[in-house]
Length: 123
Image 1 (spheres, rainbow, N blue to C red):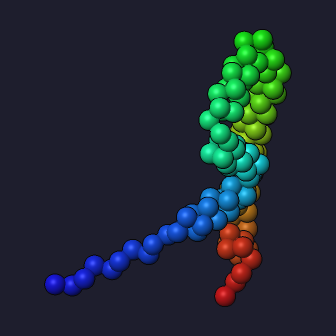
Image 2: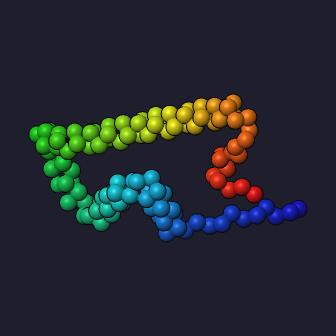
Image 3: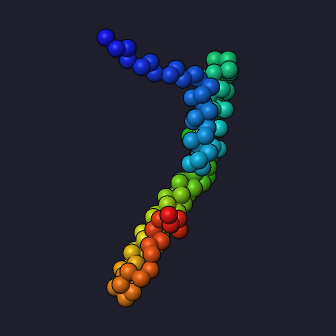
């Protein structure tokens, strides 16, 4: 019987490195860092302090103290969604214009021009 290849073991530090690299690539480093800092705070704090922290946090929600922060966060999320939609629309329009240009060039010039779809690398 042939042995199946063993999967490489991933350590905790390699996992954290990969998470932070992915967060940097996607623009989510600040959120991941804040969540990680909050997790460390919760793990390291004594349980008596956590109960007091939770009570203060709930009291702030009851008094509508955090409404501005929540609205600001919702505004940022909405802005990000809007930017993504605009980017997709602009990219789709650029792709449509490039295809129309290529079709017209092929029609008018009958293959006299080489394609530029390979990124300009002709071999």
